[in-house]
Length: 219
Length: 68
Length: 129
Image 1 (cartoon, each protein chain N blue to C red):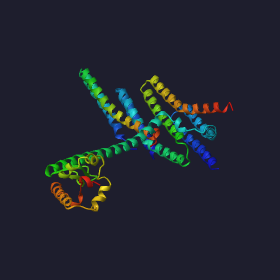
Image 2 (cartoon, chains in turn cyan, green, brown):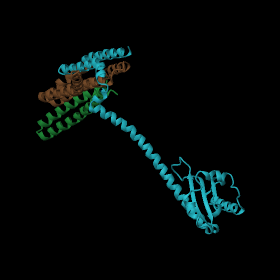
Image 3 (cartoon, rainbow over the protein chains, first blue to last red):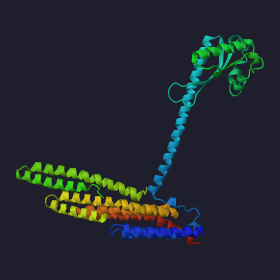
């Protein structure tokens, strides 16, 4: 019943439109042609259930004229372009941030190595998101260092330290709660490094996470 | 409705004045000047008409072909 | 009373054209074109209203939009072709005018070709069964 009413509505409206258009048309030279096309359209509308019966894949949009198709595709591509641009912008921002983080980490590491007698195994800097212009603000600094004296004792451990990053994931928890036996030496190192970084970069204490590795007690 | 109705009188006035100048210059024996005046007047009027026809085409496009 | 305005405009333009035609036929032709465009532009708003109502009706009845689009395109082509043909015929170029009309007719027929193609294909599909 729903189908039937829709079908009838379609035909009625189309005939109405055709009549209006017959009235709207200018002189009669075009009239025959327009009438032919309108007649074809009305026949189409009348037969459309039959067509749907015969061909399931009937899709009028496939029949649309080239202009209409072009317009649709252009519209679609416009939104796609917008999306793409958004994506690319995000990507670029992320890449810029990552690059800045890397450079800052390298700089901090080399400065620390120059200032103290230690080796920086890993340095990571987190920059605040959403910071597009102006100087980026440092959110957090993760450091993994080995005091120089101990590094020489355990040269075999060294590659393992580099391959297996200590500070990712677990590091935060480790830093949050002190390790089982933080020795006085370690504490002193940590204090020194933290103070140095605080003065150099104008950071707060809780933004600086330092982890001291000592050869045999690594993890 | 009062859509550039003044322009119709403007065009008619330009036409009449150009015709007058043309006649006067012809009487003075300066044929080439007369032709130039006619040409310039024609260009001015043509510009007005072309602007309006462009408007017409845009309107028809908007109303009929793209029913936006 | 739009009709009085239109008729008055037409009469005034006709008189002016009669005056100018003696001296400068070119200006008379331009004036005629201008007047025609002005009259049409003053009426196109009404046509747009009618078409808008028809479109809304059709959307409510869920008529396939391809039908309506085709119909609107046909009227647009007819109007523009008619306008161009009349202007050229006024200027005395009857042959160009008939070419413009021919172009309009052909473009209208091109609109019908996809419909005809689809009908014939369907009939061919039905027949062997």
